[in-house]
Image 1: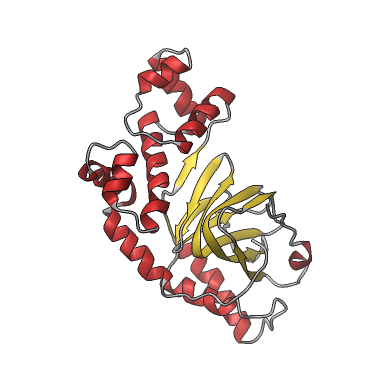
Image 2 (image 1 turned 135 degrees about the vertical axis):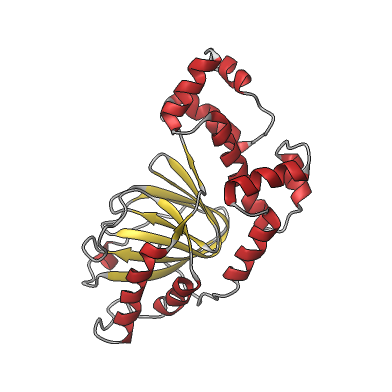
Length: 272
């Protein structure tokens, strides 16, 4: 387990700070928060971030926006290299108030590759200051993606959802879940939407998508992942995947692999 403390870093009088960190597979970064807002970028590897009643999957070409003060924890799936951008509240106008995942642009990845080499007390009037200023200009332009899974607060529903996340199965039924909760189907679906903001089937599809992505990114065959998740065929799984992310799984993985190959992080160890 890793404990985070960047209080010394946050005292540095710069509007934007960038830090690169590395974590082994299976590491857990304990719940913490930052005084500044954070854009947590995955340069290599994969992780799940838990924040604001949600689970966010971070892949090599994605980043998570975390508003200032929001407590979050990180669970690494593969060895993880992050580039964290810490932003003072007044440095970026209209900072989003809720966490969300964005897909990194080529420009943003290039800017991060340069920014992680800079000293924390960089010259704000020189080249380093221009790089940081351009990072601030690029962040609002990053496209949001749907790699999130809202979690209910109610204890029994939360337990049901955690069990499904641990072993997702596409063929589990709403009636089965409702019976397990000793509720009618209509009462269960209303309670589920109230707690998560999503319909049951929509939530389960998203859970299957988040379970599938790390395996696909690791090179597993689409057919193996599809059948393990309970889909009748790779075609049925591909239809679900395309509905969720807009492209078939093979194209998505190829695109992500191509983007992650464009940035080779420097050797570093540090803090998320």
